[in-house]
Image (cartoon, rainbow, N blue to C red; front, side, top):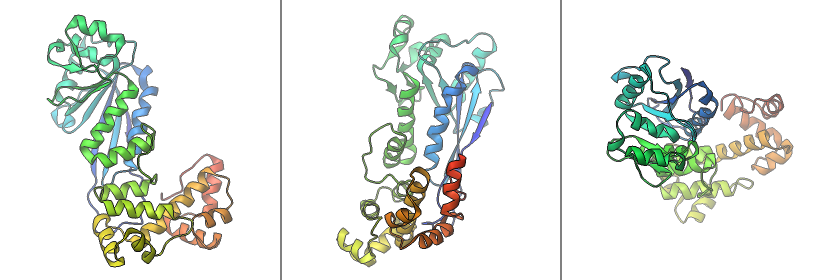
Amino acid sequence: MKHYVLANDRADLAKTGPEVPERIKYIDVILSDTRALASAEIVVEFYHALNSLVENCSYVVNLRVSGNDSVGGPLYWAGRTAIFWGDLENNWDVSGSRRSWISQVLNLSSRTVLVGGAVLLLVQLGRAGRNIVAVHPNFAAAALESGLESCGAATHLAADGHPHSATSRLSALRLLSEFVSMDHGEHTADALRSYIGLTEPTQKYESRLAARLVHRAKGDLLVVRTLDAMQENIEDPLTISDLSRLLKTSTRQLQRRFLSKTGAKLLSTYKELRLERAQNLLQFTNMSQIEISAATGFSSPVALKRAFQRCYKTSPDDVRDRRFMGSMAPEGS
């Protein structure tokens, strides 16, 4: 079993109040054989991206080959998602002990997803007549002959507790994003889809910090508009009075509403958005630090360096150096 612990990637600024205990959610990706390991890394990347957008919850992804280790009992599978990672060409081998292993996982997992050819596991295990699933055209004839009913779409979100399904590995990501909507809200699911390229951006902000704060504020309109306004004015930062006039509210109401909804101070958040932009420019452009400081509203490279070190516990020079050494993320980010 290949095991990934995907820690949250969240900044330390824009945080106030007591820490909330972190919840761990487990995802087991079940493979037919080791040849599917490389393709399953896309699921790891999906949950790595999700971890960067949600707070107080981390996803742990396990890659497992069916029948290669112990199934685990009911306690192991409580609250756990099992994804049977099929492809578009092959049926699964359910001979011998594998049949019992797969059947137990289907029975015990709290949430089950069948991808591609894995939907035919229901046929091989004698469960075809009890399920409606998403069937890829490659398997349509076999499904029809076996009495497995197709939903006629690329994904099927089962409402009755039966396995969820997707016709391909790519459509499986869309289905997983539906789970994100169910577990964390549609605003987080939209931010994730945009972040990983499943959809075109529907919101103005692309910042992970902004996405986390919108999630924390449960999509509060004033918070969203405030974050949009701050990001549209990174180069020439607005004062709180300017922001309040732009948003047609009082400075007191704006500060109190933002703090109550996000737990973050308005000016601290504004500075961190500017520093996040600076970090991005350091990592992914050849702009000089003079240009970057001007583009992010700092009076000089010295002022940028001072604020950057306080936030990320490293310097702009170190970030730029690590870029050329192949390590893109600054320490403490």
